[in-house]
Image (cartoon, rainbow, N blue to C red; front, side, top):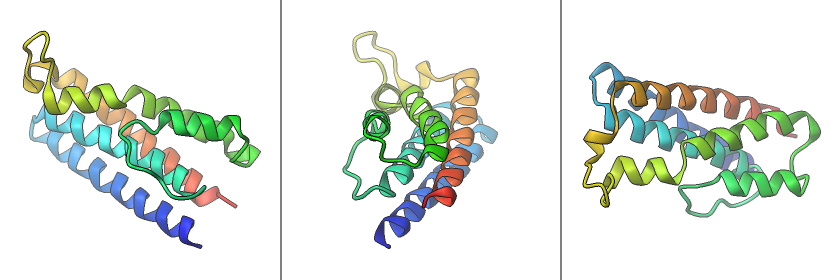
Length: 142
């Protein structure tokens, strides 16, 4: 089934970005840690979406997951995990992607000024949870 293969591919991406985020935290690269954490959660969420069909290009898959949940696209046992994945993808969504790549143009703050150790650590924890939840969802899909 192509969707299971696509889901495993997306999960592999999520795991790779998570590994880089961990390295970034150890190297004190806060901005890069937040950026890779965001991509980890994004791809974790997309791994669940891939179980349902092709996934379009987006840096904000939380809305797509919420819509799939409203349409009962996931089996009842997976609903709590997919709901949590949607929440995590929302917390590390488009706004974090934009801030970690472009900064705050209005406030004239660069990404390196926005993301400190605390923000990087928080992003990494969210990414770790997101990847773990995605593993459960992809492994539990029927």
